[in-house]
Image 1 (cartoon, rainbow over the protein chains, first blue to last red):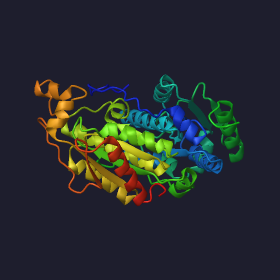
Image 2: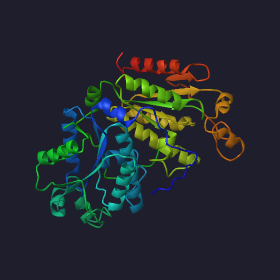
Image 3: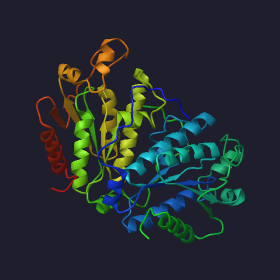
Image 4: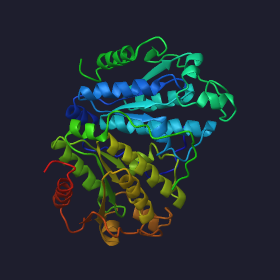
Length: 205
Length: 205
């Protein structure tokens, strides 16, 4: 955990609560945390899910490696320390979205179990839903796709500490949902997520 | 500006746009940036506004010094460098909220004009509304209120670099709205903000 440096601070409870916002929006907020190798299809599923939710009148918002890295986390690189801080900040942003009533779809490789668990704890301590979705895919299949040409660069030594090549991916032990993007269709994946959201009471049955 | 360390990143345009979300919610997103001395009444106005917007079915979310300092910015202190990074991160978070369609109400002393202008530029470059609201109040009035007892501590030398005491407050030169919390009622302040939101087409007239 990052050290709490500032003193003289306390949680400012507003008059408007999460319950008020859920009533206003017609659904609860939640963080859906997609994790998996580069090229496993995390963003593809998140984009499709966002579209399906929007058609249903549900407010979702995607946080992904590319847009967050250009904004809030632009001053972080890819060292182990920076990767941990990257995930910590994303977790805190996702939590703010959940508090605002939004379904946050975060898709990051997020290779370290400890970092993901920290974000989970942060949500659960606040009584918020944290749904870890493992977008599973063999390294061979992900590398064959290589949508951004990153595996090629990693194999050539142009990118260091690349997950799956010279940095480990720690698969979730007990994700809320385990998708197999090299075996399931996109529709099957999205349907499985929607079913889980209904089951958990996050969206209407 | 913070240096962009990560390479191999690009803005990921989702299929769902800000326009889709505005249609879903019935209003646009925007950042309302409250700035002023400690004790000037920024949070009081923001809390009241949030309540009024909620009654109107409008999704607003408050970011304030206390809750952000305990989360995303818990590893920042009060040095000049940390204050700048504090405001930078808050600006990026607010921008994500605007993109999601939410009216972000950020209330921070944010004493340095350059930091506020950087957040403004960030929003305007993305075609987003950034509304700077100067919650003006004499130092005497703010210090007389001293809701958190911080002025007392600053005068006693227990808190260093306290805005208005031993650190400057740079008043906005051209805020979108200039409130006088020691002369206006809370209702007058909130009404002025709502009128501006209507005028700018952020909420329905």
